[in-house]
Length: 281
Image 1 (cartoon, rainbow, N blue to C red):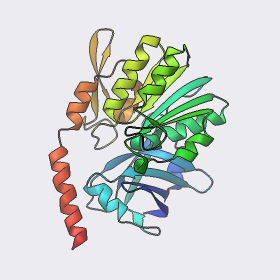
Image 2: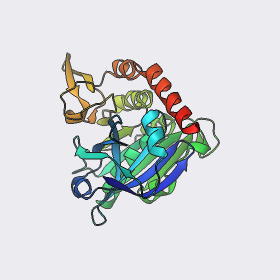
Image 3: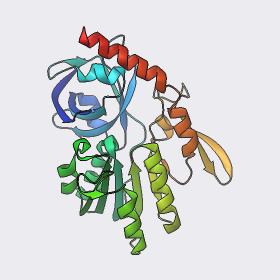
């Protein structure tokens, strides 16, 4: 059993938890993920590692309440325990040798981007961070990004905080001024990453994206997390759980990924509503 050491609401739909999991904490790196089950009958869901403390033996997760399992998870409190907490899984984000990086985070994807920014900043890398949200009330982790960045742009779609517009606005401004980076790392909704890739491509700067497709076992056996990459004119199948979650953004077939990601939307919504009704009783 994996004890919940702390719990904090970051905004009305996003929660941060620190989980006691010393074996996972000992090996976790930015970009990797875990798979958890709330209880013995629960489904397995992947969540990216949002932080870790090797001395305390804890791993931080940040999740958005969007389905039945995240609703159940959010009803747990400090002192409660999770049934399963498996990891670290996946390939850690490549950070070695990078001297100047632009990190772009959208919504809850900022929770994944933050530990990457922190690791790069601690290594002396010049970090520019661009974080975007629909509105001020959905803002998360601003102070943490400011501490881990040489420069920070905060964007909101409606202009209720920071600058108005999406994350591509400052990105295009920097590119227009001839600014160069060793790499652009984008993490967030698929459509956001698609447009960040499109904005970066004319510059020739490498662009890495973190993919979060449907995932079940996390070991490459179920095939649920498969992605199509376009490599040298050929379509290549990769699995996000073992080959990723980071991929070359120029190779990812985002349209297929978005189509696959929406396959179970109605089922997930129904399960979420059923779970909410159970808690109301």
